[in-house]
Image (cartoon, rainbow, N blue to C red):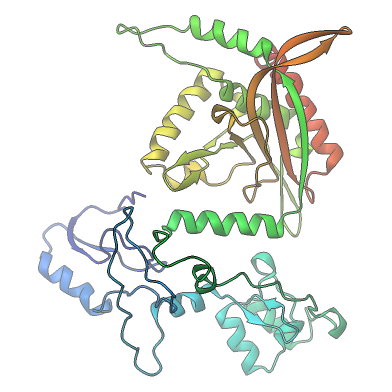
Length: 416
């Protein structure tokens, strides 16, 4: 991802080399020398404040077989384990885990999420973290909760302390590799994008109660309208049309309008209240090498089909080259995942936090239907709405999906 410097200057020193996988938040990545400033002096100045030794990768646990090279059939030499750290020093990986505040574990086996400062304050004040009611993100215990606990506020009763059984641990990497013969696979380390995708999907399925609604849409009128619109598109001197509308562009517009017609479904759940969004900001899943990203079409309900189409083409092109800005793929109130171009008939998508809904779109295909008591052939597209049942229950989700169906089956309603 590109990072634009806010100040002018000359690059005097690159602190974090290209290709580095893990960099701590707020770490210095480069040094800019101001106009007239000595480059060597600027570079030397940061060298005093930044550890001289390069950040080493986390020490891998012993594996039954060495990692393989990225290319098929090529073998990479075994990575040398870093030398033991001096007593009292932590590895960068361990320090990062501590900064992330993975939390303490309750005696019952359930995890108590807390910040490092909160754990230290709790220890100094002899406060049992198991009984502290966290007010941070996702119930995390933070410093102010410890201050409240010392005065007797914000404490759970002993019977209300976490008693849930610990979740079964996933098999370790060593256990998984032991199932396969040495040399029968190539090992490709995860990049940061794949790690983040895995974390968010796991968080979504563990914390969001998914509820699914599926229906079929007759897209015969949509396909006819799409053909007419594209045929009428103005062309430049080279004969290139100003736009080329896709079925997915109609889906984006129809979903955006459906959220406006059923505003109680255009929401985001938080622990203390519901966020009712005024606009329909629709994220669209785009496949990129090694994963996917979801750029967001802002105020999609107010944009024309041609505008949505051109905006999505630009997003998709920059997503594949990893040139999207964070504000272009963060936030949003819902999302669309379309696998119709791969011939997938129907599927259920995983909600992308903090959204409360996501629409999975299958392929449009000719199917036999019954019209006026007689068999007929129609172009049918199956869609499945995944909802966060805390925010959008079954009846509300059905109402919103019904509004979507009316719009997608009668595209002229999108311009009224």
